[in-house]
Image (cartoon, rainbow, N blue to C red):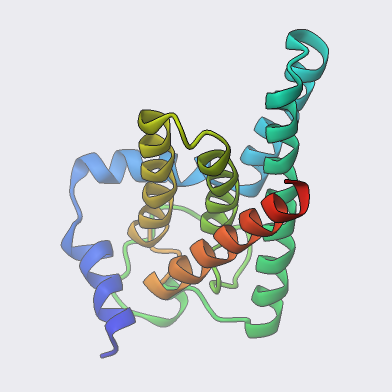
Length: 175
C-alpha cells in the first residue's frame, strides 16, 4: 500500500477510540466553509456596527477574502481531479460523517480553516497563546477530516497548502 493509504488507516482505524469518535465529527464541522463564512460575516458586522474597531474590521475582511479565495481554489481542484473519498475506494473505513459531495482532493475544510488561521496568525503574531490555539485548531480540523474517514492525508496536506497560500496572497494584497 502507499504511504497515503497506510497513514489513512493508521489515523482512521489505528487511533480509533470513543472520545475521538464523539469529538471529531463535531470538530471537523467547525472548519467548514459555511461555518467560517458565517463567523467572518458576523465578525465584520459586529466590528463595523457595534464595536467600530477599524483594525479588527480589516482583519475580519481579510479572513473573509482568504476564505473565499481558498474556497474557489479548492472547488476548482476538486472538479479538476474528481478524486473519490476513502470510503468510496477502500474497505474497512470508519466513516463518521456524511460529506456533502463525492470529491476528496483537496480537503475544503482544511483549506478553509488554514486560510483564516493564516491571516489571523500573521495579524495577531504578537499574541503567542492565541497563535498556538489557532494553529492547533487548524491542525485538528485537518486531522479530524482523516479520522472521520472522508479524506486521505494527502488531501489535507494540499488543503492546508491551499489555505496558507490563500491567506498569504490576501495579506500581500491588503498589507
